[in-house]
Image (cartoon, rainbow, N blue to C red; front, side):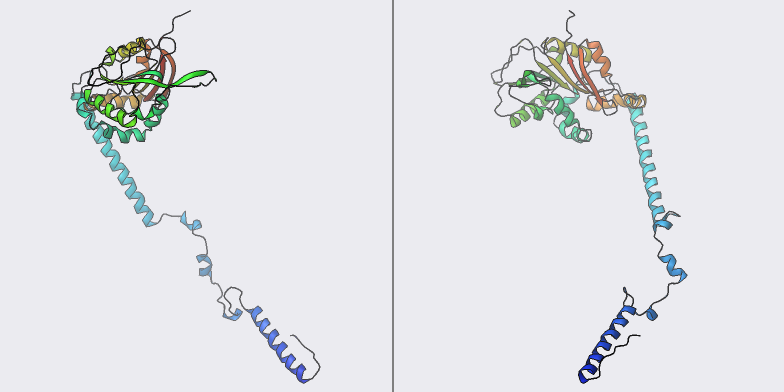
Length: 342
């Protein structure tokens, strides 16, 4: 209890009343709950049930799964098992069909009928596997006079660095970079025409380019073009760079093709750049490729189960570098003609 002693006077009485009112209000405020503003007598005392309501959900969630979550989990597992069953059934049917097909080794004629829709057909798969990045890395290594065989619809064209210039290599030595000229070759005339139109859209001012419908095994550096095409004529004995992407899978004699490409590549500083798909590191995946190879070749014109490493070894070319991606099914190789022993 607070006692205030002030001298009796009219002013003192008024002051006394005001001070008493102030301290009385102050004491009442202090006695109220700071959160709810209620007096202690008005507050509800927590019961045993209320105490359990405040327990965090994390302590009880691990005890059992809610019915909703159990339903979602069951539906998800049913969907996954159904999809896996569908894949297995489709695979079994494809294997059965593939075994009944009689497909020749040379399936290159398939591209004549698929040329117009080829880009749309492979676009999604190449994006998923990021093959555009692999193509770019490979093509930008090209220099000098370049030959691209099995050019198809020109899926490498956007990555070319056209126009020769001087630069430095990894060791800081002065070298020529970029492409002085490019010659595109494919066996399918439909694909060559699509490649020609694509190149003219991308590089309308580049003149040193030629397009030839020809078997890659018969390509020779000295060329003649008709006046109708008005294309540049390449007449040197060798190419500085030869490029082939996804071509060994469709030719009848891949070993012979590589040997021929080595014979028209500049002996001392020339290079052969390959990006191919073939056998994997893993036996289980190779078994799948083998089982589906005839059906895939019949439809797409591609034997995707060839051993690219063995083909390169049998060609007699010198290996500068080999890298593999996508479980070993994508091969990137840098080769050059076999150097004479000194």
